[in-house]
Image (tube, rainbow, N blue to C red):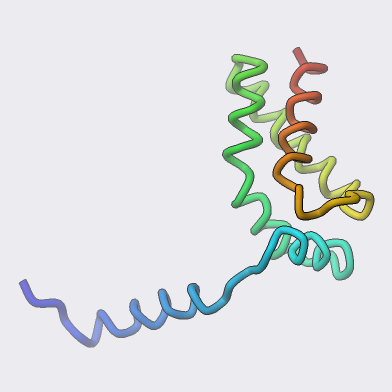
Length: 107
């Protein structure tokens, strides 16, 4: 089954542009969010760490609905306290710890 080149080329260009648009490190994304309130940078961080945060909340709470709420609350805390994170290169650990402590309080 041969692919139609007129349909394939736009798809390849779209994939190539995604690869070229490297969003950067966690520290760079966090700095963009703090400096410019860049929603795209924040969305990229949520995309990177949403599963991690939700997983922590699920393990602690055991309730899928409560875990969703705690996960969302964790990212709200990130949005509020982004400028106070001392080591942005350790954002994954910060999110893990925040999600864990928040889920414990919710339990």
